[in-house]
Image (cartoon, rainbow, N blue to C red; front, top):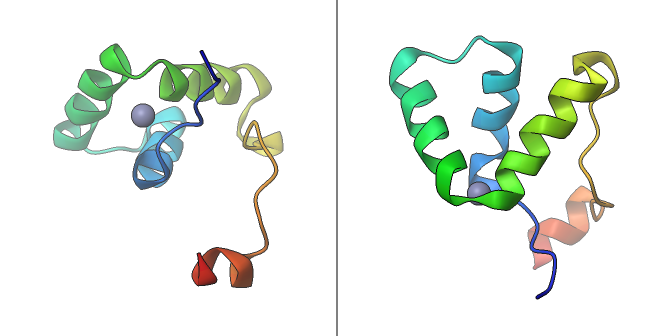
Amino acid sequence: MGRTLHCPEWEEKLSLYVDGVLNPFDENAVEAHLLRCESCRATVELWQAVGSSVRRLPRELPPPDLRERI
Ligand SMILES: [Zn+2]
């Protein structure tokens, strides 16, 4: 089984969630997603472990201009 990356559409909410600044509605949604998404769970755990000051995604992001072309 390949290691799936976390869901891009959740990235911003996960970040806010780790910072503890997510509103309760989205927080519930994130927690529900984490229950069934192992990769997002790993991302949250990683971010919580390293702290917000050195937050990095567990992968190399393509440059923004490349992402827009995909
Ligand atoms: Zn996910």
